[in-house]
Length: 505
Length: 133
Image: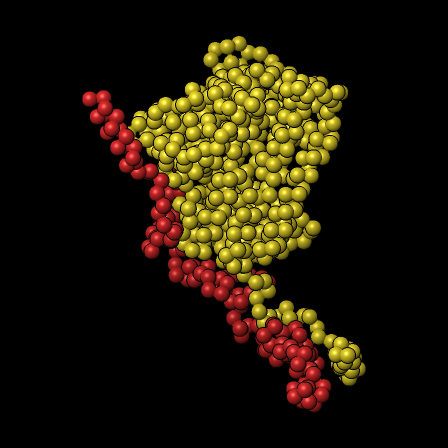
């Protein structure tokens, strides 16, 4: 009844509208505006990677008006789209394949004809990625964040011009602006990356066939993870590393040596202390001229695919930093202070594009802290307590200082180790490679560093990180009850070995 | 001798104070120093001079960038003018010229008619009787 009445009223109103009334000419509005054209945002975030989207969600939760600009077309940045997430999918499924092929028989499981369906393996990876990126988009919506798909460029200190992915452009004005543009793979001089034969990690997670031979330049985390994937799927993989140890900076030397030994046993060929001089993509195979750094002889390596994994560099392309006079350091990082402010205090910066390790979880911590600095004037990230994990098999994980760090700094330390071969759960799993190594202050027993190589190390390091963050002693960990039989008992026993003696070893 | 040592060790263990202690609910410190300090992960542990020196050379230039309700940008181009982009007088008269009409719906929302509630509509439709029904 009521709705009928309302319709009747609307119809009557239009019926009585004078027909000769001139229509309003929009030109009038362009000469006289009654309000600013675009609403100012409390926070404009350039980049929708882990740093950017986490900051956007946190700021939305804090009641701020937020815009997040991302040009990739999907949220999550390198990590979700072409980094941590897709590589973990490949690592997990290639491990399963490898285990079914080589490890199931002696466990009492006899499998028939095992075939690799690479296209399906990639599809499974893509399903994980798309599920997660869509999930992030939903979270932005849920927290009231405006998401603009386009490339942002600073026009002035408060205005960001966005070239929209769908064409056209718009501008966003922000009281605060956050640069979270992340990083990109560092190219190797003289090798053109086509993401087919010469690939970065982006191409290495999307190969359409298993290469017969693969050479990996760089024995860091990304290089070794990708080397593991393709080696398990049937490639003959050679890793060329300039330094004498694999694993990159931060990995404890003893752990790095143990890792190399285990991966070598799995079939990966290592050439450490070796320099790549040049590459040639002209022939059927890609060739690399390498030279042993310490007076060895020169040789040529050929491969179907070469993976360039020599590190990542900050990405600031197209940001227009020159328009606002922002400086970068000699490695292209945006210079910030302890509250993530650039020299223009309302423009802040977090994640891979600035100082610190290029890790998604570090970026995430910074994203929360930077919003807290903006909103509450106080935030917290402990840079001495950021874990690193390499998802090879076995996994390698560490937090805090390594033995070589402590030696270099002249800090005295005590070591406690416990091998997984003495851990009951590892034994039942027939997965006993690796150990836990704990470094503690000899006077106070306070934990200084934790290094694990072994099954589930990536999960176990959380316990070490928590202990380190709380300033625990090895005895605190050792006197904490751990469930039996679990892999985590190895952690407890290593802590026991640090200040006293382990029971089971 | 040995017994004493064992007893002493046992006593020490009984009195062991864990180094992890509950510090109470976290609070933001009452006074936080916001002067720019080097980032803890900065390799040089220093800040460039530009962080400590003001980036504006005059009060006028500072005022152009200062935030109140949006930046007071008097120097921005007229084509991109927002509030403060041009002097009010330069924008012309507020009233519409002859033959032009504004529709109320084109004004900012605060000038729109207040929306009628269902109860008000009922009251008008029934000549006020609905208010007493």
